Length: 353
Image 1 (cartoon, one colour):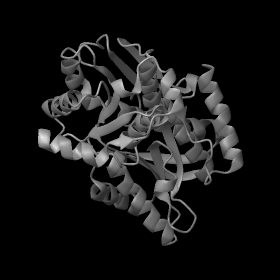
Image 2: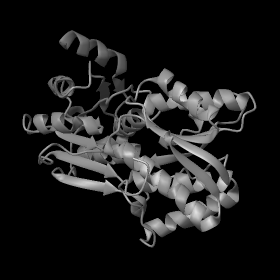
Image 3: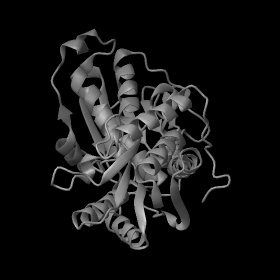
């Protein structure tokens, strides 16, 4: 494993040079290395893993720090513990862990090393956050809700679908929020969008591009006009199918997740198959905690929930495939979420599971 680690470090380690601002940090740049262990999927999934890594890497670039990531050999707790431990042994004292599957691994590791700062996204360690661990959740249901409203207002009528990855709380909340957004638009604006249980599925994977494309093929063949893909690399398969069909003249769309996936839907002709994206600012959250670690202001032992009230979830500021009037209306709805006038449920009560 040590030989494997050495090879991986050589491949992905990044040296950004020592920035002027790094001299002002309370922790010296040569004393801190920033690391990350990927969740199920790859670092270039153009979704959750990639967004988290980009936030950590941006902090490293700004502060002149060494940074790297490791992809575990599997997705068991033991695999994650091994990867985190290997990074620690290589001198990394800040490690980001993006995903629900890290709960048991972080719970184990946080008790092993007193000088290791850990950030876990979308979950918290089993038994609670230790004194050097920050747990971050997002209100994905609010983001999904706004994407649902935007989709309904733009398309006005037709069927929508959903392809999730592994059926975990964060992915479920995207689906539940999306459904509520569609229903809200139907009731409030008179749109006529439909949802059927057979068009709302979980693939069981965040890394199976072919499966995502296969599921999308079935839905589009059944008349679905837009599919919300919350499935990492599997979701990219959904987007690829939408691209192929739009290039063939079909009026179908994909809806991105986690980050603005407009460029993922680029069809090579200056257009994209992405209608909009349900975003949560994982990159910003990871960046903020990495910078806090550098500056000596890292506050472990806490659980943070980020949502519409602090601008951490929503749709992109620029949506080329949405009409200006649609963007303006969605902005009004987002403001209702921010000020508490409108509430989105984080459960499946009365919804497609």
